[in-house]
Image 1 (cartoon, rainbow, N blue to C red):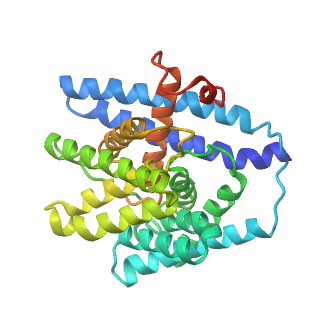
Image 2: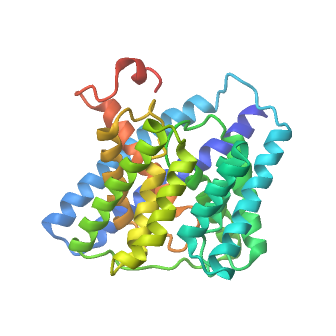
Length: 327
């Protein structure tokens, strides 16, 4: 029973990471063949292999837990926080017309200020609430997706610990489960042209590193740091940039990458590489999972897993032997 409960938390997160990674590779190989797309396909495939390596270890380790799962009052509070965070974000994004980035960031920041012990759960739920109404039509479906995400959030405690994007990947699992049940059709957009793609990737690197600095160096913590970057991006990008919506989205996406723990990616250079990977996958997965809540977090999750996996497997000792032993 313990193994079954743990698998409910672990396996969907691994599946989410692999699915988003494969979608990115698929985007590269289905574009008209050029030297650039060929190189992009090889890079993305390498990153997906690294994601698979880390995920295989996490699944293999966590399906045989050393500590039993014991559900308590705090778990129930987390579950409620995920569901409420999703519903509230939908209301702010649609009814209050704040847009999904500002709405999600605002929910995360308020939760951090008011109920810090439930901030991560509420922030996770806010990513469910970012789903497009065409994907999750109505508050009942948002609440249902939040319920699935809340369950995974509780059962996956300690799994993929310290990886940025885990909360979003959890929301992505919840949204996907409901979409599979309702048959909603995700939206799709073409891959941005090269100039735009390069600009979006550069924004991702900056946003990831900035979030990491706020979270780790200035000790604000991951939720507050990501929410602050998201509020800034959601408020300023549409005013400053002609294509403000994708700029705000990629900055918010990479802020989840910057939520990574120092024990996983120690130092700004590695976080910058993770931001680069996040930006690449953000661009490559544009045609897929459009409107899914948690998609941005799942992309960041892939970026962190891929960077960590490559760092551990590399011969350049990007991560110390002591930290390597944790894998």
